[in-house]
Length: 405
Ligand SMILES: N=CN[C@@H](CCC(=O)O)C(=O)O
Ligand SMILES: [Zn+2]
Image 1 (cartoon, rainbow, N blue to C red):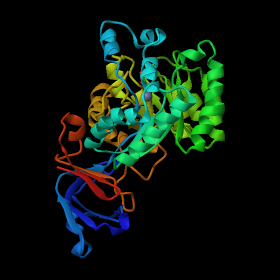
Image 2 (spheres, rainbow, N blue to C red):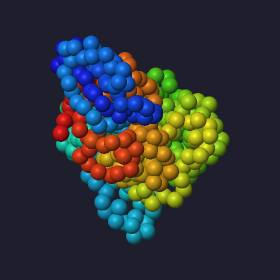
Image 3 (tube, rainbow, N blue to C red):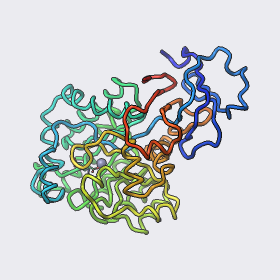
Image 4 (cartoon, helix red, strand yellow):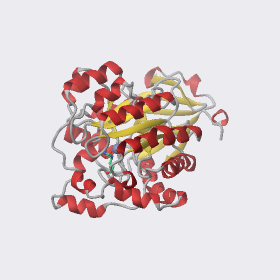
């Protein structure tokens, strides 16, 4: 149904978290033509606005649809064996250097067809949707050839056609060095810059470019080459940085105007300052922190002090965060990183959207796109407090109710 032909819909007596804060009063919300057409304190509502509108719901907590701004949802196989190895004391880096880790998922993903990848990824996407996601970013990075990276991005785009969700795609060709380029990392970076990025742009498959700037990934100098190529092709920049060590990757990404610097457990004050100056969002990934049993905490106090917006995402991936439940991430952001529930929810709505360069999303405001969730809870903080499936009463995508219990 086109948004013009949808009936106007009215929600009454909802507690609203607008993407940054809880509004003080119980609200009435009107949706028309896929957008939020009106937002009033309930006791000030003029019933004239209700004429011709469908009564879509009453009570509960309304939030923007959740924005999961960092996922690796498309992959084949799984790495449960590595999970067991790590529990026995082998580190993530040791597994990677022995040819496992990301490269293990690369082998499985290269040998999967597009349809097989769709079949493997849809249940993961459905889990995100059932937990309130209306916008999801999906990275490539388990192909590492031009053809296989494009295959992953095509699958990501197709997922967005199969389900009512907005999919943003990110080319992560520089995720790991593929074995056929062993000892020739600079040549592989040339492949990313000169072939992968142009091919992804030519097919309209990528919205952004990402890198893994790390000892087991790519050096700052190599990442810089990729940022330059991304800029030439008009793609936004994102970065996996300061996850296992501090290479100054966040400051470098910020210098190139990156939308976000993600992970950032090892980020220092200079990096925080650079991000603040560039308006780069800090994407916190408590799932990876938890699964890797990391102990170095991201510098939350400094991020607050410098006013760097903080997003929270699932990082759903087969290695470091095999978790497809964004509300669990809100809980972990509070319990592990000491975010307040308000910060965690802003991280999964307004700031998550900002990390994707989509500032009109993740907000409940007049004229904003009507991507909404209505939850069976009394107050927004409960979303971060309790870990419990089944609380999502309605999920509204582009003005259409797509999930109702
Ligand atoms: N750090 C690099 N990339 C992913 C993990 C990928 C994997 O282990 O498969 C992350 O966000 O943690
Ligand atoms: Zn990641």
